[in-house]
Image (cartoon, rainbow, N blue to C red; front, side):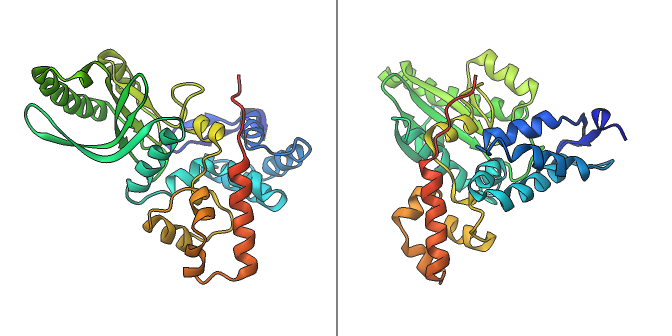
Amino acid sequence: MDKKDFYIIKASGERDLFSMEKVASSLRKAGTDEELIPSILSRVEEQLHEGMTTKEVYRLAFSLLKNKNRLSASRYKLKKAIFELGPTGFPFEKFIAAIFRNSGYKVKTGEVFKGKCVSHEVDVVAEGKRETLLMECKFHGEPGRNCDVKVPLYINSRYQDITALQQEQDLEQVTTSQALVVTNTRFTKDAAAYATCVGLKMLSWDYPPGKGIKDRIDQLGLFPVTVSTLLTAREKQFLLSRDLVLCRDLIDDKLYLDQLEIGQARKQRILKEMESLCKEKIAPTS
């Protein structure tokens, strides 16, 4: 089979032409040593088969990288780690709040705003020097489930109800607030077109270009605990259930590892992994 014309199946079910360069690029973005990349690509190519999914390609590359460099493997699995913030969307809201807090905003979660017609609970409110962002977070627990046009339609209607009351009361906030819809996946074309038309700001995994969720994580070194290659799924869910979302939070609250009855040697390996990830800040790519 000619691997140049090899098709794989995306999460959406669509077929896409396989690109070895995309795999190489994702490995580089994870900080993989350049000398390791050719050997990983060679192993991936050996195991390609008809009907293979992007998820299977990712798992294969991740497994190979994990055997060589656990820190790079943690960064490589970042997108999957965001999906692991489920099954509820609350840890995702806390994670988005942390991103904006570490970007210089004053942040609150679960704030209730009175509207002209009804009251509305806003997931995240981020107050900056020039703007106040009212955010609605739409979390999806698996790839391929993008935000369709119903999401920005709903969010914009809520925001219009809030601002209608502010206009009636002549509140200063009306000139500075903006609605922002956040998702860990992507927006459909219609959703993006509508949001742009009505002036609704959007934040997704890779949008806006250079300022998407992935870019902000890389630039801030702000990784979720689910990115760990040493913690088990059960241990990650335990930490999330205690509202512990960030790697840096685990470093500050080591007591949670004791509650999990993790041995001293493994505890030190986990903390070393957390500390190494927190030091990682990847410069924006052009």
